[in-house]
Image (cartoon, rainbow, N blue to C red):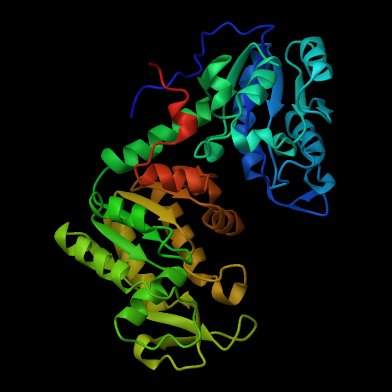
Length: 397
């Protein structure tokens, strides 16, 4: 990975207009923000810029408005939330580019913050256009990318913008990139990956890349159903991805070739639907009307043993339908165990992906992981070994 231009503590930015790209794509319900980890994650960078007496102009997006103004996807509620966290007023401007924005960017006092409207209300944002990049670059004297989770997309505010303004990687972005780099090339061994999610086809690249670097891969969640079925067991009405036999064979073969232990559930919690009571079953006892919704106690204990034997853990994908308490034990116990071992200094633990982060937060374990990535696609693509456009744009030639 080439060296990227990053923000230096000694850089004199007093009075400079800093165009800060963040990811405020947070879940909302009727205009209320329901989960704030992405906002909290960038607070240290904002506070750093406040202390440096910069004029801070924040740009971000929320949702997929497809280039049109959608009132429910305005960043206005975020200005209020940010004001609360920073204990200072964040000025919201209902525009993204133009003369008014440029004038306001110059007028704000040092150490103050201006939040601009949703970038994706402009269709040019997702088209990575030069014209939109030039307009954005007029708002700042320098640009900082602190939106790692958007850096796998070739959008104007993470890619083209860097050609028109002095550009730097933010502290959080650098930390994220270095953590993932460490995970795939210099992690303390034994290294274990616990991977879940619903589709195996979306994670095949990651699995093949990680198999070569990890001692153990534990498959949980709906993804495990494919392997359970492949082994000849009935999985009833459980979620499964059809026509993936060749993929499964490839993963099993790669694990054998690379001496990577592939661990699958030995028992599961089944129910007739998401609202009924769970029943613990061995794999050979699943019937046609069963729905697999969590891993069983035998499997949990086996995963505990693996966690105890590991020095580094990557977790991506919950173990079951954790949103419902009845089927949350697997994810909850994995989160608690990883957290406990990390706090006892036995383990370096890295977690990433939206559902995984939600589960960790739900079970009160967010302070028990070495690193939690709020990124989904970018986190996984970097693990897969792909070049991210937003990171490449910050490379020093």
